[in-house]
Image (cartoon, rainbow, N blue to C red; front, top):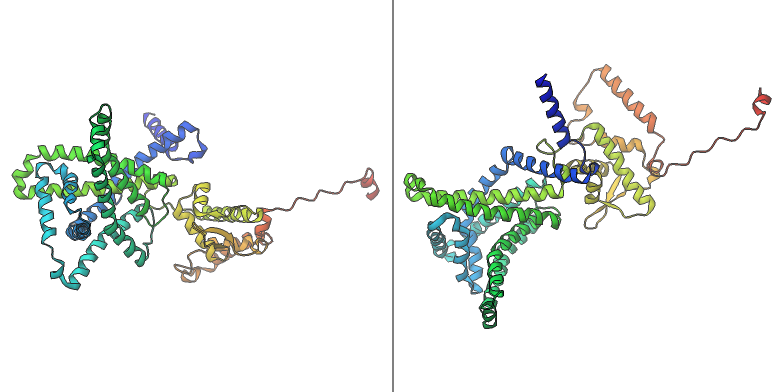
Length: 460
């Protein structure tokens, strides 16, 4: 009896958390359910997903490209005369390593100063640039995986975008830092700072500015790194959480580095290198975790218990195909704004991957076309009176057969072929005369003609 009670409680709890859509629940329950799903899904991704594995891969790639990356950026900064500001920024990033952070900073800068581009030659310089670009590509691949984006940017867009970030980004960043320092050092500002309460307020802002700067870096990464359109509110949510986590991790790791004297006893001079690796890993893990938060904020339909891409059943694909053609055909027939992919995702609450598969099958079947806008919209490919529901269902049911297995590659006995033929004939019999126009603008029913009193008697 007790086991049945526990089983029933677990079943009710599972149903309360994972069943239904958010918009079908009361306001307070929607927020609580979404937050609980957020926590559970993020914990699942950290425990069983690829976040930790990809963070480890990024650490390895960072070790290979760290010195070339900094050397490429610092060479540009030298030309603008802001090279001396590099060491303080590097020290701040390495501050959680403790008192040995200055040694690591000097070690990295020494490597950079010893790097001679003239000695490398053209092949060496090309390999150096490739190493740097590979790190940027690895970051994009990891973020695209979180955002369920299978395709990278084109080679030209990748090359131009990566070099823009590497060459222009540091210049802009240090220009802002230098401008802020110049403003703070101006005599009128110094006199204002000596006056309370302005001095205390500016001091508090000075302590908060690094936090805002870290958040801004995360927001920029989440907004532009994935090869998809990311809404600003989603990037901001992920950036704020990741920035606060980074500050908390910096404090916690600094305490860990200060108290972990056993590492120095065991690993000797390698202890600081080991701590550096752990700190790099935590940074990449926080970056990927923030990207997951941004993704789930923009795509709450992915807050499901199962990991990976949600798969639709055959019945749901047919239902979704009919629903998509109805919505797109209805807006076209009424002269309303055409549906875009983000609008369809938000309206239907279907995971983007599953929705894209059905849309692709409809376009491949000649039912839909895309406009050239940004984002592109969907329109019927021809007059809605010529799009039959039989062809629509056939396009959805047979999607992918030309690329994977088709009926001809799976021979079946005559009995099974007969059953399949009857199923197809039954479907065709029910919808063969119906078109998309009948679906979006059904003809009004013709009322039966009135009968005169006594007519039945006369006919009899």
